[in-house]
Image (cartoon, rainbow, N blue to C red; front, side):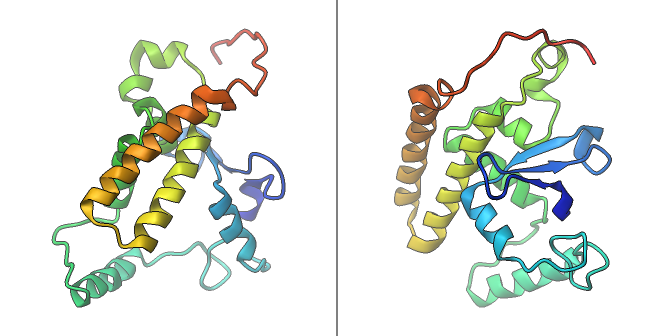
Length: 192
């Protein structure tokens, strides 16, 4: 993440704009930032580095295999070892739980910058919507879900109840006015 890619941190609809050269599928990725993400970003001291997260100030953070080993050690110490997991499983877990909390598959695919599934084939050719409002709601609810699950030491029953609550909240926010607040002018979408 680079400071120059962050937009509207002090305004409405803060965003991380990942250029196509560094994004999956060679397609620019727009990532709506939740209030918690903005708060974390604002708490990071700005240095002379272009990178938001850096250890030496000259390059992006690396050493994920070392971080994985440290996570595994902490899990073993806590009696919660997980064999055969990969860093990529965090992405898979987020996608699965966002869907279980009510985010539709095409919204989750846009969050992941996927062009397959419901966004592939003919539907992907004709439907050019970025689903930004829907992604913003999904990511904001994902943030609150993570905060509550990690802070409240929930059991499986409470977590399932929270997923149901978030599913209802997702639907309420989209149908109850969030999308209706925005003007959607008629425009011709051309094949670019």
